[in-house]
Length: 231
Image (spheres, rainbow, N blue to C red):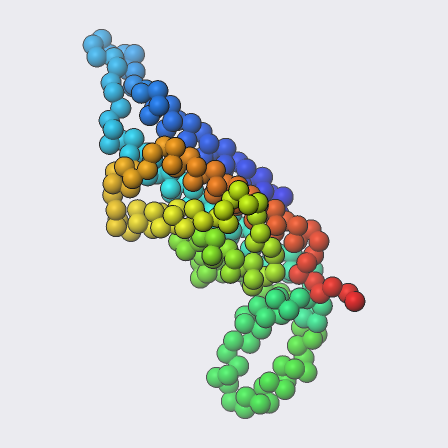
């Protein structure tokens, strides 16, 4: 999980650089310089371009959100698989997930009663080993609600500092990203809806919220909260 946290902070620095660049262009009315030209060495940056640059910020932020969640959930699976823990020794949340993954088709099998009895007699000795198929569960659909669903499934905390407002801006980022990706809205039209101050505030909340979630997952793994507490 340490690698995930380091990669997250690296991506945040990249995003900060991008935001600093846009801010300089807009607030300082930056111009393009063409030193090799004999005439008209300076050119104003088109206002339409600044709108496009602002819209592109939503793609960068969503990429941060989705990639961070994917890697965090993958770390949970990696830790579980390395643990070689038996079904009986893991939490109810992990047990439910294990059953969903491994016994999802038993209803369609003949002799259902016999199959259920077989499962009951053997499941406690099953070793927890699962693969995470991110593309089936995470694809353009991540906001704070989705993250809370994952926290319920696996058992890590979704609580973050009150200043993150429970990650409510992730919903905006997700929707704008999808609108842009599917061509529902143009980059120019998207960018004109927000000032650079608006997008900067969204970025701050997204980064703070996701940092909190990653720390929660890290604590969950460090303390092996996926294992059932010993009475």
